[in-house]
Length: 160
Length: 160
Image (cartoon, rainbow over all chains, first blue to last red):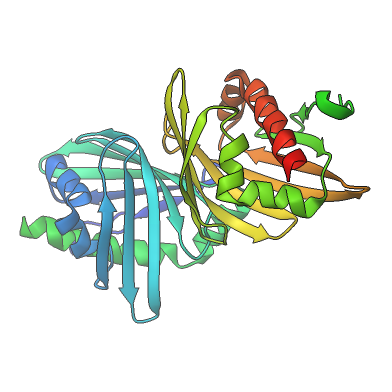
């Protein structure tokens, strides 16, 4: 379900057995969303959903690595991966791995669609190695965490 | 097909559409094969098939990273990944990624079976993200390269 304004929500579907498909619209032009997703200083302001985020590495280029460490009240969580495709300002494909399940790698393909009128739709497809890993991610509270991140991103975009 | 002695070959099959299954027997006890697969000094002697191999990183533990750079007459090739499971002396599960196709990750599960009488069978299952990636690996000359590596490993094992 998609609503307007500050209560915008993401649409999460699972059309293929190893995938999660997410759509979310942002009230900002595509270049601005791209910047907020690739500039380490801006990324640190929203990705951690209010938790302190350390960007240890962010090489936004094909083959480049990324690694973020989130300091939450429940502990320290590292995430990392590598960029498979970088096409500014419209497409990023990267691997995604949480330190808690090392070697379990998802492929996140993110496409920014310019809707015109200062709006941008982010379409994300996450492909997992197995259906079990996909279902584990769905049960992990991913949707809540993602909603918090995207709300924080809304604020960053509005401030730019 | 498996033959004895110095002309031992690996059996390569593709029982599942995203997997390559490989079996190879070595004339050495399991602990020795494990050592040759996890000691950076020994690994550097066989993994590169005669080419110089730089072990930039090899953290043999769950969550640990590895990265090797092979200096071949055709160029410099980096490979890297992360350990998902480490159970000495019988099982290693790790991700595998070649710099030439960043973000395309295979999961290599390697099991060492003690056959007794100083022989060990290595069973490797490589699971790819897609069937296309699996087929690309099969067409890349993987089987020849692997045979060269395993022949070099035979020599390292005989020398220990």
